[in-house]
Structures are given as C-alpha cells and as structure tokens.
Figure 1 (tube, helix red, strand yellow):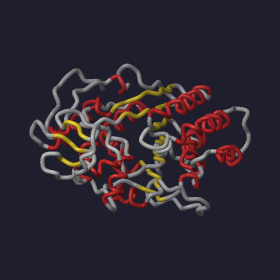
Figure 2: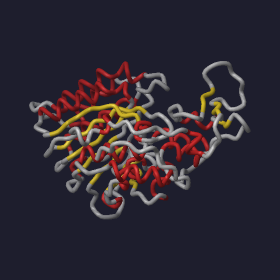
Figure 3: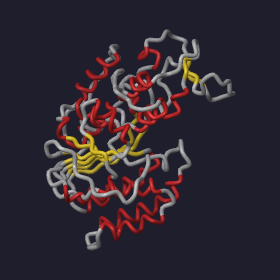
Length: 353
C-alpha cells in the first residue's frame, strides 16, 4: 500500500454520519462480514488510499473515502462508536521481508506513550518517535492506538493483523484495560475453521468499553467447523491438484491437493493453475475461496485484483470478530451465508452463536 505524505486535509465523503469508521478499509472484507450479521452498510465509512480497492468497495455498494488515514483527525468523528482497523501487514508478514519486526519496539513504545494518562503532548509530538521506523508502512500500525484512544465517543473496536504482530495487540489491550474498558481480548483465528476452503490465520483484537467480549459463546477462536476443500467449492472432481507456479516445473513445494483445505491465498495466487488442464485461477475463483461472491467487482489489472484479494479480511472471519466486539449473534447467519455461497452445506455439528 502506497503511503502519501503532505496531503491536504480532505473533506469527508457525503452521506449519513458514520457510526463505524474502518481504517485501511480495502475492497470490502469487513463490510461483507458486517452485512452477514445485519449491520447497516450505510453506517460504515471506510477510509482507503488505494483508489482501485476503494472502487471495488463502492461498486459492491460500500461507502469509501479516498484519503491518507494520517490526514484525518479522530476528533472530527463524534458520531463514531465503532472502529475497525487492518493496518498494512507486509512488513510483519512471513511472506515479506519482515522489516517491521525490527521496528516493533518503536511501535510498542509509541503505544505506551500514547496510552499514558500522564501524557499531555499532541499526537504529532508522539508521532515523531515513529520517524525511526525503517519502513513507513510499519509506522501506520500506530494509527490503531491514535484512533482507538482519540475517537471521542468510541464504544467498541476490532483490529486485524498477521500473527507476528500479536505483541503489538497485547500492548494495545493493556492500555485499553488500564483506561477502564470493560472487555478486551486478543486471539488468533484461522478462517478455514469457519468453513473456508483456504487457510487464513490472523490475529485479532476486540474490545468494548461497556461490556465483556469473547465469552465462551462468542469467541470465534474456539470454533472448529468442518473445513471445505478447494475442489468441492470450485466443483472439481476428486484427484485434482493446484500448481502454484504456473507452468514452471520447479521442484518441491509448488503443488498441493485440491481435495483438502488449500494454502493461504496471497497476491502470488495470480500464478496458481489447475494442474490437470493448465487453467489459471481468475479473481472470481480466488474471491470465492476467500468467502466473496463470484461476481464481486474486483478492480484494475489482474495483478491489482489479486493484491486486493490478498489484503482482505475474509468475510466469515469479519462477521465473527465484529460479533465478538459488539455482542451480536453470528454463527447461524455465517453458516447460512457460506452454504448459499458454496451451494454445498458443510456437515453439521454443534453451532456456537
């Protein structure tokens, strides 16, 4: 994700006052998840700097404001009671260079500084500490705490990152608890355990100022629904394989069976092909594996579409996590959504709601 500097303060896009602010909103994974559990799409305003990702979201019926999140002031959102944030993960991800791991202590220090009750300095002063970060994308992770503490009437929040960033979420959780939030929890969730045919393991932070979160009936990390296979979802016969490097016959580690849950889908999935006939995966196929309808309007070139797909929160996971943060019921609606999406109900077992 490109980071722009020195942008003018933007005007907020027209529409009803947002009740939920979604930072780094992307093409709509959180939005689709919110719709699954009955949240009003018009109440969610997503902030996104990538015009193609924002275009995909708006084409799907979601609200987007194209802006650099660092140019916005939390005080300008007095109507917002919910905050969602999925800050860029490439610098933390095992699929990248992991430069953010070396900068983690900087982020942790900023979180502690911003959360200190004795701190009377401005965010701009605190943010100077972020200048030591080797990668500006890592510094964007601090927007979680800036808005989490700065939104004047915030009642709940939901954050997502790759598992390597769990320490950051634990620090944020500690600051929220110290400031009197009633419910705070950090947990890891693999979307495959919610019925997706591919793995997507992410760490989440949920918090509610007024009520406990993630009790035994609402913690999605405790769910183990029967997993689907890529072949079953795409309608392939048994015995098919997916080759991850196109037609190249590189040795080892570049092919897996489609008869079981597949590998985590990244932007490199643009090179995945069906081994039996050489057909490559299209964005519609990859989106379906991630929990989106086949006709979801991904935007731009093939490369840009797969980049959008790789960045999203899988909608079933988003539904479960948002429910954990807000206390909504989610299990039955999420299973109904997936059964309709894949047209093949997964085997039934005890449901959590």
